[in-house]
Each structure stands twice: as C-alpha cells, then as structure tokens.
Image (tube, rainbow, N blue to C red; front, side, top):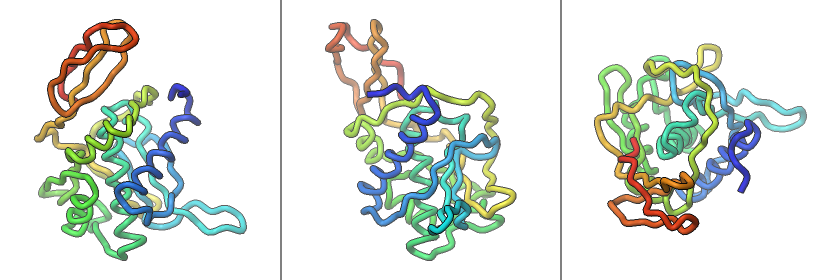
Length: 221
C-alpha cells in the first residue's frame, strides 16, 4: 500500500474514508461532497451548507473540509471529525433539519441525536451547545477492524482555538474535543520497525516481521 506522504494520496485517502463511512454508518444515503484539506485556525473541519463547488454542465456540490494542521492527530479523531461533518450533511441534505444556530456555531439537539446515532459521543458546552464530539467505542472498533491507517502528513500552523464556521460561505464547523473523556483505543508499537496496531484492551502482541514484543504507547486521545 502506498505511503500517505503526498498531498494527492492523502486527499484520495480521505475520499475513500468518506465512502466507507457513508456505506457502514449512513447506509450509503449521502452523496460525496468535495473533500478539501485547507488550513484553518478555528476548527477541525467544516461542512458547507450551500453547494459551493461547480463543474460546467454538472450539478454543484457541497464541501467537507478537514483542517490541514490536524491530519496527524490520532486517526480515531480524524475519523470522528469526518463523521461530525457528515452528520451536518445528513441533517442538511437528507433530513432537511437545521442542526445549528448563532452563526452556525451552536449545535442543537438535532445534531446531538444524529451524531449519537452515527458513531459519535457528544458533550455539551454553554457557548457551542452539543458541539464536542469524540469517537464512540463502536467507531473505534470499526477503525481497528478496517485497519484505518494514521496520516503522517500534516501542516504545522494549526492553532487550537474555539469553533468557527466559514466567514464567506455559511458552513458548520467541527469542534475541538474537550478531553474530558478518554478513548479506549490503545496503541502498541514494535520497538524494532515502528509498526503500530490498536486494541480496545491490554494485549500481548509480537510483531510478525521482527519477532519483537510490541510495547504499549498509552491510550490514544
């Protein structure tokens, strides 16, 4: 499998990730938007409420963006950001439900209901409502079972500040996890070749290539 060290490969990988999530968590109901990787200092991602991409002679398409400076986070959180934005897409395009207010920053109960039904854990803040999302155990298990890989490529200019949508085009933004709850995904690394695997519990694992015992590197989060 090709390494994710080129922008084009990462973009293609995110498209494939979207398609797999759409099939397994959304029953294939969503139409893939344009998946972008743009720098933003205000959110982990966003979904455009309007179709802002056009191709001559074809229908316009919405956009889901994954912030370029957040790609190297633990993959379960990159996946959770994608699902977060897909929930916005579901509510907007399929359910015709407004799940945000206050300039598309406050996430209401309709967002929470849909997010919890599609693999996310949701918590509330006074300012942004039900905006804080994390991967559920079900989503973590799906990541492990499907061998969803880490993305080693990343921009270094991401600043962790609070939620914000786009200023020119109405959009809904992803949020920064509160860190109040811990992921159950454990990381194990081969001390010889650096291969990484995950589990949802403590295990004894030997790298098949190096025959070395893999070492736990803590709970991902």
